Length: 184
Image (cartoon, rainbow, N blue to C red; front, side, top):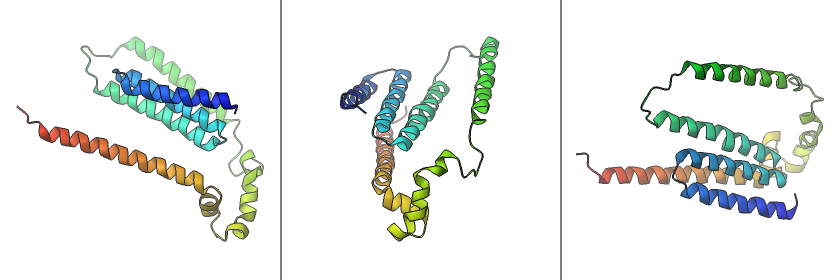
């Protein structure tokens, strides 16, 4: 990727993170965090880490955003029930169309186990053929993750540990704040 575009993406990441921290509306914060994940995915793609970019876009922006919005809607009190039959008339065809589109898109995927599939014709063949001789590791998956992609794997592990520690700190702080107040 072009260096000015990298710099622009990095500045956008920082600005989006700052905005997400300072916005008061939970739905707006969720949208900003999803946008942050998409910008991070673009940055990862520019760094040729396409697998990380895909996971970030799918989980960080997609799944996490949907789960946050579902949690917000489930915990928000509404003055009147939201069971409008017209809403179902719109939502059900959209779901059917989306499922149909996904099924249609899946017809273009290679057959399961096809040795001529694009995933099997690239660098994977070289890894499989050379891994034992180069790494002295009998398991091909371990050789790829620990020897060829060790820094990437270490970075992903660091992200998971950081997320777990952050969640633990937030939950511990919330528990400590709850113990200091008495119910009246």
